[in-house]
Structure formats: structure tokens, C-alpha cells
Length: 319
Ligand SMILES: [Zn+2]
Image 1 (cartoon, protein in one colour):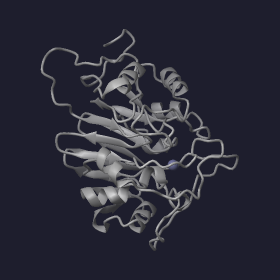
Image 2: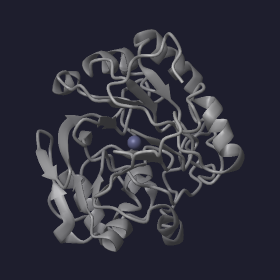
Image 3: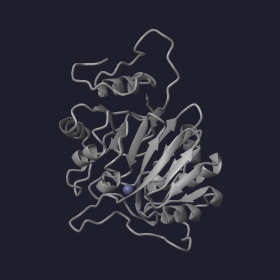
């Protein structure tokens, strides 16, 4: 459904995929009236890329040939991350293999944006089960090694790489994690170069380890993702993705949303990510952990022709 204010997307929009029950209805309403059904009566084409949200910055991109995951983390154990005290650093890491199996059946490539538990903790098990290639920094890979990830699948990157996979390319960019507090510190900051550290047991053991951003290009449909509310403007200023991911936060990143959208050419689609309180269940509609309506308004003001997509837990959008 197009309104007079809608942009003309460069690709045909095939509508939202519907999950089940109230979640699907809520999500349909939340995206502001994107047609829930197909746009016409003809047999729908197979989607070029199906994008599915698994909470936090966990995204699944599926094509006819491949499944790519960014920051796949679904185990979810209570940390207090969205309380006033913040996440308890002493929280023990839990990996719920049954939950991973249920929600993440396939992976060919796994992209890691940084080393925090809510991005990386499920990757060793997933990589082992799927045989997927894993891209990350030296620290990310060392943390994964310490959690028994399969060595032969780990690909160390530092930003600047452009790799061809089966039907898509991945370009890697240097980045930084968002900072917090008066001294601009990074939560669980630090690196683990060289020797593989001892096995991470608590969430504080999963240090940030440098941050990366990724441009994932399926040929005509492309996505730019940063796992944190920060980015290196000059690294990405030439990118023209179909969709860019934005998240609440970035209070120490001046013009986080505005500069990001300008640097990426005001993309046709802007997708909210990492906006849920991840102490709450993945199998229920997302409980906002940040002000997603403020984010929507900020995007609308900065890039009025972009369509803001708020995809709910376990729901999909076809590109
Ligand atoms: Zn983080």
C-alpha cells in the first residue's frame, strides 16, 4: 500500500510475511499499514531475500541458495541489562542448544559485529552444528575458540575485506562500539589478541574486542548493519544500501541517526534493530528496551522518504 508520501522503492515490495496470531497483527499495525497480504492476486514470486528478526541484533537473511546470520543470539538468560543497575557482569553464560536448534536451523555464513555475550555467545555451537564460515576480529575469534568453535571455519577480518560467497558479497568495515558514562567507556572493553584465553564463563569475559560493520549485498538488494549505535562515517560514506539498520541509543554518538542515514545515501528502508529488552522472551512480542517511537520520529525527520520497518520477534520481511 503506497501513500502519497511513500518513496518509490527500487525493488518491488512483496509485503510483510505474517507469523501467527496477535504478534503478527501487532507487527502489521506497527509497521504503519504495509499491506499484510500480497499486493495482487498473481502467484507470488519467490522472495529474493527474506529477512527475519531473532531479537537483539540477530538477523537471518535467506535466499534460495544461502542463509546468512548476523550476531545470532537466541539463548537469552536474565542479566538485568535493561534495569537501572545494568547487566550484572558476574552473570554466568548460558547456551540453550534446544532454543538455538528451534530458531536457527541453517547458516552458511555468520557475521560477528563484536564480542559481547548478546552477539557472540551462541556462535560456537551454531558454527559447529552448521559448518558455517564465521567472520570476526582476532579477539572475537579467540573468544569463540575458547568456547570450542571449529577452528577451520573461523575467518579473521579487520575491516576492508570484500568477499564473494554463493550469490552474495560481504564487505567488512572497521567500527567502534557505542560508549557510555561520563568517561566514554565501552562495556566490557578490551581485546584478547595472541593466545586463546581461558574459557569465558561470565558475561564480563566476553569483551567487546573491536567492532565491525558489514555490507551484505545479494545483488540488487543490500543491507548495512552495525551491531552497536556507532559507526565510522568516513569508512562507509560511499555505501548505498537498500536498507540500513538503526537502534535506540547512541547518546554519545552525535547525530548518530542523521549522520548514518546521510552517509548511506538515505536508504529506501530503515530497519529498527537491538530495540528489545532481551531479558524478555523471544517467543512473545518484543518489549522495547529503548525508545523505538522516538527512533521512528528521528528517522522520519532525517530521511522522510525512507520507510521505517519495525519487525517483531521471529517475523520476516521479504525484499
Ligand atoms: Zn555490545
